[in-house]
Structures are given as C-alpha cells and as structure tokens.
Image (cartoon, rainbow, N blue to C red; front, side):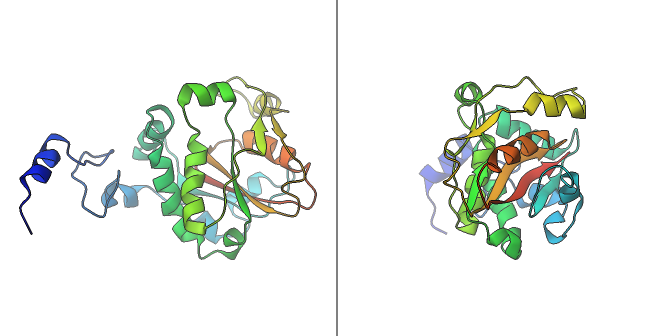
Length: 229
C-alpha cells in the first residue's frame, strides 16, 4: 500500500471511530463497527405473520403487515444509538439503520410490494428545533434499498401534542387524537403504504397516523419501526 503522509495525518487528528465503542472503523464500516451492529438484538418479526407487533393493532386499526426490527432496552447500546439519532444531530444513523434493516425486508414480498414510504411526521415547531425528522432518515435508508419513493408531504402533523412520557394507554390515545391530517386524501388512493417510525411503545401515535391515512380509499397500510420497547 502506498504511503500517504497527508491521509495518515488526517486519520491521526480526526480518527474514524465507532460511535458506540470508539474503536477504529474499518474501510467497509460507517458510523458503527460490525461488532456493535451485530450485538443489537433483532426481533426477526418481519419473518413472522401475526407477530407480536401486528397483534398490538388487532381490533384497533387495519394493518397489512407490521414489524419492529430491534428490541429496545433501557441502558442498552441501542438506547445510546437512538439518543444520538434523535437528540445529537446524528441523522445519518437513521439512514444507516434503515438500510441495514431493509436488506432483510428484501426477502419478504409483503414489504417489497409497498408503493410508497411515509415517515411519521414531526410538528413543524419540533422539526425546526431539531432540524430534521429521525423517522424520515430511517425511511430514507429503506427507500434506497427497496427502491421505493418516500412521501413527506401528504401526511401532516397539525397539532403539537404534549409528551407521551408517563401517560397511561388511554391518555396516550387522547393525546394523539386528531393530530395528523392529509394534505391530499386522493393522492394515496389504491396505494400500499409503509408507515415508518423510530420506536414502538404503545402504538398510539401510529394508530393516529393510520386513522388519518384511512380517509383515503382502497389504501393498504403496513408498519416498520426501528425498535420496539
């Protein structure tokens, strides 16, 4: 390998380190080392029809398929990763993890048959303060791998709801009632939508999205979240 003192100097001053373990990344690694990536526990729910995620929506809203890719546990490396994604400006983490998950979805016809990806939208005030929507960046990665378009303008968050933390299931439902609207209820007619979010807790936010999307005729809705709590 040809010696390049400038490159070696850059690597020394600005090392390319894993955002979780601080180890040097290899040339085929980006943001996360392979060791940290494979240590995050997968659910493999995308392989199962009538899996625990789909059952959460039974009797509430009609869902074609639903999955969460990782298990979320407090104090885990994934919690640190999610914090970096949502609050530290590391939006590229969302795209990386979306791509990583979508490679597995390529083998599942129910997910490759979608027409369009829709990320759960943020309220404009929160989007302005954060500077980006983490769900949109997850969707961006999925869009790249599945070769499906992402729509960020049809489903809108029109009301800024208070934090869901420490609320009961019913309070979460009330908290999300009517917070989403469609800018055009005809645009998605006859489409199969993949609704994308970061973490599934009670599912109340996703249910609110689906109730808004159901204003469109002949729509099919599937769900992907990066993790389930």
